[in-house]
Image (cartoon, rainbow, N blue to C red; front, side):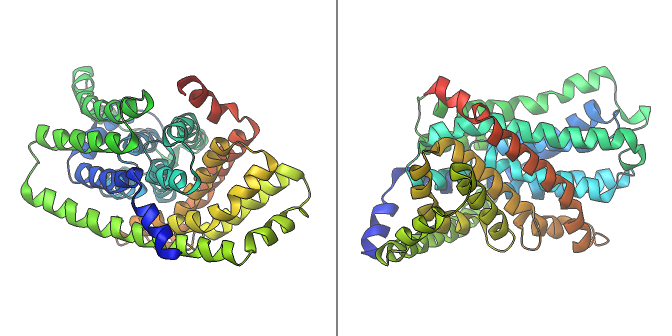
Length: 390
């Protein structure tokens, strides 16, 4: 029975999009796209208090819309933006938290590998969930940027404005905008092809790989060595995801065979608050699990348990999917085992301690949870765009 389930899962055409999106992210991460984007934000936003940190959040959102994974934005911004902001007197906790939170946008802003896994596990439409994640993703980016702006307005020493000589002339600023054009073209190619119905998510992922190759070629950075390294790393990451995926199906098959699903459904019936009580309990469990388990593992273990509860209470699966992904995003950010925290530790200067990284995450996790609450109270933020497109 387990082998039959695994065979059926591995034959899914949508599953092919995962290694393609990972390959796209790794190719873009090895180009100088991030440096050019940061240079552009340096010139346009540097004159504001906290401007470089806000610009970093914007770049992370753009990266999230290009690559679909968390690691790419955290590692590239940790390498490019972190030393530059520390050198200019920015508070280390503000900078670390901004990069940590910004990296999480890759999980929510489509295309998203986590969303694809959610859809494969639940049967929800990938295109609909991609569309549903766009406005909440922009909302989270706005909340984080507002937090930085307000904090630096009252405490200017946390993010001092750049001196006039570093802000650049209008000519330099306009020329720097060219750095945004090609990444935006890649985003439009990928999301436009999927949301318009021209391409499936798998075909859209292939279009994204083509766009990443064009970016590398345009910057004269395309080489066999770079492609070989990206392909090998893609194989490692995809292999890890597939093993977790297959193991989760073995778990869910045994789970259902033992009748555990009926027991969970009965227990949920005792929760106060009806649908809202069940929703709060599920999201709270994900938040706790996010501190100790990897996000993909959490998804594949909990979703077979949660989906019958969602159906029982008549909760919209697309709306629940967005709330679930936002909570998974906090798992990347929260101590002690959030992936983004360790990505940051790997690229941060030696004087930055793990304790600094842990402490920096607290206000940004609070902003993410505030965004979750807003989307929970106003479901139209997630459901409006899918209703128009599909």
